[in-house]
Amino acid sequence: MADLISDGKTRVAWLSTVANINAPTVAELTAGADYTKRITPDGLKIDPSTADVDTSSLASTFDTKTAGRVGFDTELTFKRGDTVGDDAPFTTLKYGVSGFLVVRRGVAYTTAWTVGQKVEVYPITCGEPQNSSPAANEVLKFVSPMKVTDAPATAATVA
Image 1: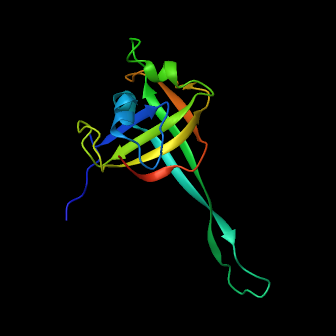
Image 2: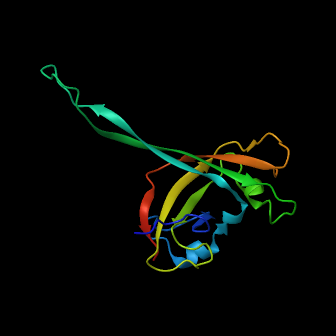
């Protein structure tokens, strides 16, 4: 059994619109902004959390739980660019901007969007961009906090 290495096998796009988050089309994905090369190697943070619901009763002698609401702590760390095109995430992902974050994992970045691929689609509204503190021997960076505004499609299939 071989391990799947993640290096070079993630693609991230920003879409202004998508007709069906469960089945984004190749045309919609191709028309989106590919931000993969602007994200730092550790800059894709999409952390789900599931709340506990206490299902114990007054008669219980053991605490029981079931799965409750799901939420996502989402933020992306971007490298700033010195040209307009290279700095598109910084100029686009401003406070209050809404769209769709699409993530494809486990497929070479250079592989085109293809029918049947699995992707994650998150309806997003951006928070206030946060400039990262400058540091020696690092690129200039900023963090885009993103709020998931509706249930995402974490196992969508490209149509």
